[in-house]
Image 1: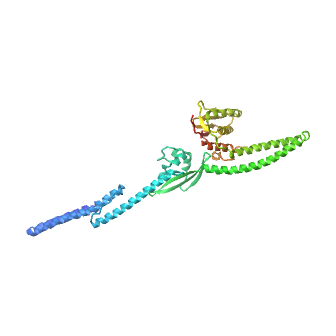
Image 2: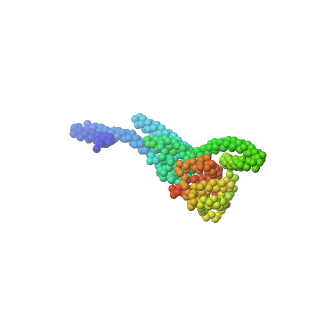
Image 3: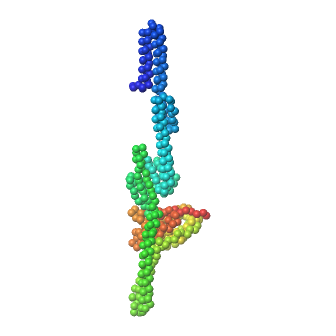
Length: 434
């Protein structure tokens, strides 16, 4: 067992003075004067040894106290000079070190506080993970964007929160950036990176919503195309129809019956083309909703009643949940009526005879579901894109118009097929005051 420096010093002093006492007693006991003088010197030597021992302990005690203060992260303790040059050098070094540590810690705390505030106030959703890929920090924007509200996320993995977007983020690798489209409407730019914490890598995710910017640029682009098409088509149809009508007025019925019938068909085709272009123009000219408190339950009943004959012709049954009390919601009745007609019509077209459509409504949510053909995964992300349609004769504007109306109302919505085979169009509305 290795002895400490203190123990070795004490043993040395005890051994030395014991030997001196023994020798003095044996050699000088007959000479009383020398014997007394030797004893006095031994006593003085012992006193000096004790004093040296105490002086020797001061730096050690000082170092121990300093180490304990640093262990406790207390950087306010400073030592007063003792008047002994050897110890004061150590005290000055310690005090300088403590001052520097205190400044560094203050600076670090200020930076950490600023970073926390910056993350919390950021318009970009930020999630910070620990060494085990578990969530440690979620800022306010992330909670709002991901719909996790006040859920306690700390210590959970991304897949544990059962949020579809987070499930996709879990597959992202460090350094990767990706654009993700959710529910066919919401578009996000996602980036995953890392930082070093105590020598280990920690990942963080940044999610920026691009939905509004993309929809705005998209609408400007297709609006310009539609206006150009409408201008050219309307000019051509106007002149063509004028010529046809003039020709019809001059041709005798008896001699040119077949030609006149062909011209009338051409006129009807012109009208159909005009209606076709008008449908596209409606998407561009869609006015902002004029909201009024409307009984959503009655509106749904009326639309279902209107669509029942069409459903019956296809052999499809429309079922509604029992609705008794009024449900007042601020909305544009005409626009939402068009939305409901589009949704029910699409649901019917996905169903075959014998299938059914269910309309379920609560105070804040409307769900229209059907057990018809499910939406393929590769189609789901494109459903609300302008001019996209899976129908051979589809124009691809029904869901685009529906999307724009619901977005202008501020309603959250989604369209997806569930694992149980039912396809749901969900609309979350904001109820008004009765």
